[in-house]
Length: 256
Ligand code: NI
Image 1 (cartoon, rainbow, N blue to C red):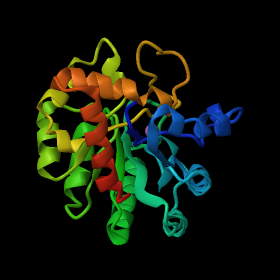
Image 2: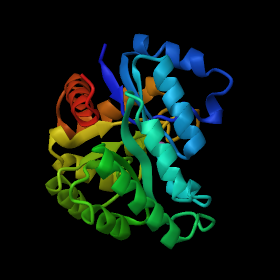
Image 3: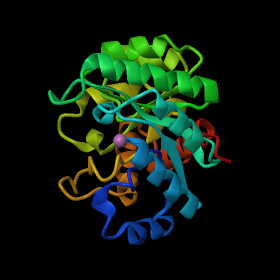
Image 4: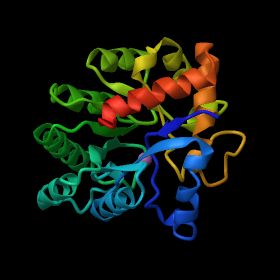
């Protein structure tokens, strides 16, 4: 059995309210050695920290997601800072920009909230977990404004050209079950080029369930399907992808 690191899963989500502990408690038996649960707002960041305290193999990130930043005030930084003092918090996230949904908060607000949290990460010397949907150019320019902050682009959906820039800046790229979907050609091209030491895998549970289970609720038990899809592109055994991405994730999040 492979040993896997799901670097991005939302177990604080309401979709796990009915069976959260049942799902989490069997993950080690399913080969999932580590999970990072990022927050999406203050409440979900609190819940992420609580889960990390309850499960030895769960770590947390705290942050305000661009889709959830409408109520942002700079006082949120103090609360995030307090949460980040917990020893199981290993990143600020998920943060970034999302221009996909029309009803999302205004772009200028998203950009401000993203910048404030990049500064927070810099002052706490923590990496960031970035969400970039249909905002590639603005996202990359805010990343470039903070050369001392390193991070991961989660569910990478950008171009090969941008991937090359990010790798040069020392960033990681992470991939979800989306790479098992029919329209994944662009992401597979990126993976084909990407050095193995820059790849992380994730489920983004409860969303983005890999094929052939697309449509069902996702959980970390499916993360091996992401490793297998990467293995196919790279022409290496899935065990190798599992081992390297585990090591990459441990290095990135500072987990020994
Ligand atoms: Ni997410």
